[in-house]
Length: 171
Image (cartoon, rainbow, N blue to C red; front, side, top):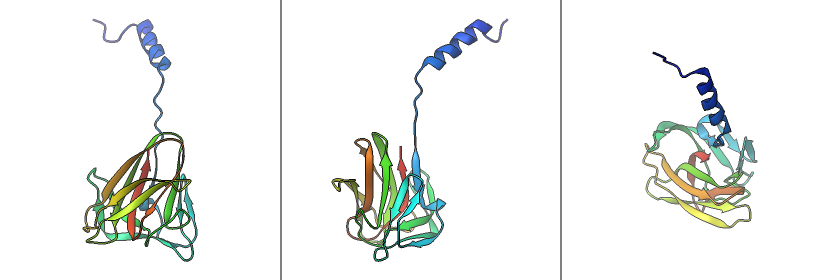
């Protein structure tokens, strides 16, 4: 009784596997959980992402007392507070996609009663999507997603009022 395939058969299987194209999946993310508390008054680069802020239109990174949990099980104990309506130059998060990609944003409105709108724009400022930021119920993190059309720079920011962002994932 032979438990292992003969050496030649193992070699052929390994050679066949090596010839297959590998699926390369590059994922990058910006998580408030990984950031130090700060009052930003200038842009902050964090790997593939930049949190844009100015002296007049700042962004706050802070811990939260009660963790927020998303439907997929992600737990957040910090947030990026956009502190109001944004634009590409301030109160926004910029990132670059190398090609078609999936964008997932974990977020909530800073209001306990009103949903807010998070705009997704390309580098030229063209609005690609308006994503819903649900009211903050004190326990759940909302999730919004979008399929990016191709390589390029993109930004997310609030259309008018405060939104808390917990994590941005690009895959």
